[in-house]
Image (cartoon, rainbow, N blue to C red; front, side, top):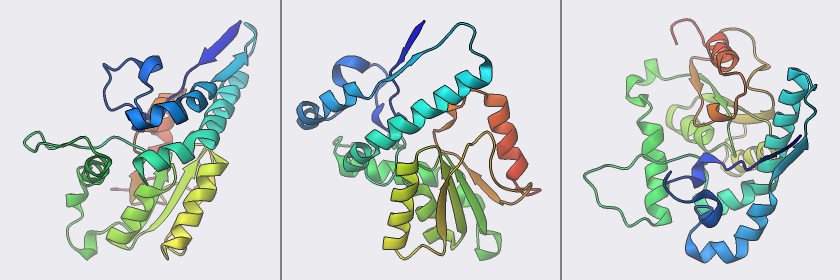
Amino acid sequence: MLLQCYLYPPSILPQLRTNLQSSLFLPTRCRTSHAPLLRSITVKASISTVMDADAQVALLKKGIAELYDESSGIWEALWGDHMHHGFYDPDVKVSGSLSDHRAAQIRMIEERRLSDFRGPKKWPKNVVDVGCGIGGSSRYLAKKFGAHCQGISLSPFQVQRANSLAAAEGLADKASFQVADALDQPFPDGQFDLVWSMESGEHMPDKRKFVSELARVAAPGA
């Protein structure tokens, strides 16, 4: 059996009604130069009907890592530091420009109940960013709260880029990144007082295990 999967990062899906394969959700000026490359980033795997579940999951993770290794440079060029959707104020007219989208991405981060951390005494001190992309959320949270942030991704390219950007912004002592599996996180129980995961859960083959790991590494009361 041949399984052909088209995997598109959520940051290029601003409108679910758009035809996926025809537009690729790219701005018109980008389609000519980037669309052929994106179409070539296809995860193909010959999966035996007798392949066990562990082997299928391993194959899926390999495909996801390779996809983001090959494509993250494009997403960064288009969307900047943050590989996720934005939050748009329904009462504010937007032009649809990249600057509007990037402002909306920051608003999306702020909408994740960060207002609960009022005052330095309540600020998170240790943050894990699960499915960190190129580390945009981690760097933002490190700057906002002075927290120590650790990000994980399946993609070696993303991890290398995230560490480079953290160093370039003077945040190497606050934000670090490593290749790791969200379903088997390399952290002890109860390590983080803020567990952060922005639009990475859709990639997880075992949602129950994913949530269980998020809860496991969260500090009591987090």
